Length: 354
Ligand SMILES: Cc1ncc(COP(=O)(O)O)c(C=O)c1O
Image (cartoon, rainbow, N blue to C red; front, side, top):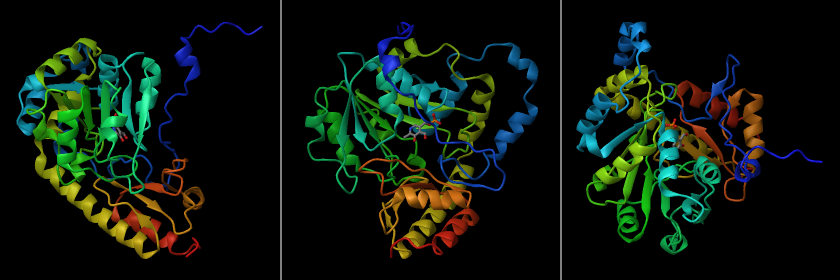
């Protein structure tokens, strides 16, 4: 007889999220999890060096007051419009807890960041998947498809595809959708524009950000959400009390304050992204126009999995997403120029059906 499970049926039925691998091997070219190849701002090292271990005896500021002040100055918002999280995954968890349940579905794009359906499963809410067009643009009937949802997630730029959507499209969605619109801007510092300016205009809009990509702080874990005061107040009720640790609060402040450094690393990554895109196109790849720190590229023979494995044999690790819309592609994080050269040089030596 099967032993009765202690778990809720929803948890037994779901698979957990599969994070991109973090191989320990030396000498690999790691282009699989959209980390930043450059170090965090110099101020971060200084803060780390001068941080007194004794401070760790005390709980951190549960409200992240100074950090939110810094972010408020940066985004031209009030501190009451901002909440901080242990990475933007924590922000996403709060949002699912606040706005979804068995009778309040969420809607997200397909393909998109694969954590959303996992959070939906945990919450026991339906995840309505809105198929993107063949070129990964938004479908005309998006709002119709999302109608039953209480939470609509637009990832902009999208992952793993890298393309963005226009601001007028987002404005129209915010104006017409009856529930909460979450614009996940994890990659927005590499993009042409942001939705942050719409936060004051729409009381149903939440914009989320992360320090993991453009600020090189994936290991530090900081996410932010910006929204109308009432939404932030509600999210404060569900967050873990001390969700951002003391060390992260101070290093994140140092990182956010150094916008010059941010600009310089973002610029380097965009230049490398352009080189990578041009190099792959020259080799016959289809490359989706990227506004992120990665490119989504299909080899000429359309066999993304084979190319992924060929790269892997050379210790070049990228990400492959099986599936009808994604299986022809691989997602390549924009690394340093040396890493990009290594990938392009190897790719030019293999037969990919051109
Ligand atoms: C679209 C998107 N949102 C959010 C995240 C989570 O970022 P973090 O939890 O590191 O802030 C990621 C990470 O890859 C992502 O791709």
